Length: 203
Image 1 (tube, rainbow, N blue to C red):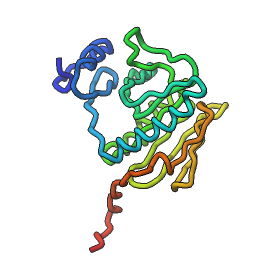
Image 2 (cartoon, rainbow, N blue to C red):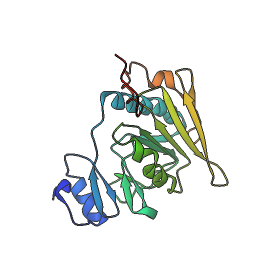
Image 3 (cartoon, rainbow, N blue to C red):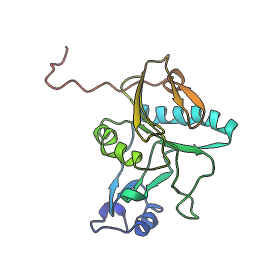
Image 4 (cartoon, helix red, strand yellow):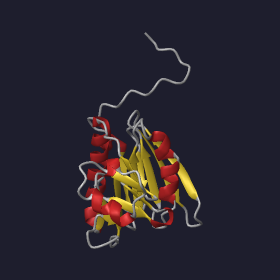
């Protein structure tokens, strides 16, 4: 059954069975599925750069980094999402023997798209924060060299840090490393930002 044509709520098992043979990716939100928008060139380049940089550190520590093909299950909110990058140090825990749904990531990275940025910064961020294993969430811009990072403190409070400019390094304490934004954004032609509301176009 093509997910894009499904109108009735699906069980998690029905969603996963259909998703594994689907030609496009869909996220699961409490029985309802939503097709994911395709990414731009800069989006893909930045995601690949982040994955490569983190994997270089992860290999030395026996940690694991996943690309956007790995689904993440958020049981408390009955969601299955596709982060752009995720991973952990330690043993991955999967939903079942198929090993395509991760249960215990320690970090999540979303490369922002113009069409989904509001959702990624709002509801999706809150969903990731609800996953007990997650201690770091990074939101990465495609219109400027910038990463907004949220880190869970020992008391459960989330701390925000912004990293802007090619000279910045973004720490990922769960991997014991820091990632250079110069390397992540190398060769990327950034998207133009949307004009501010009410502003006139400059000829």
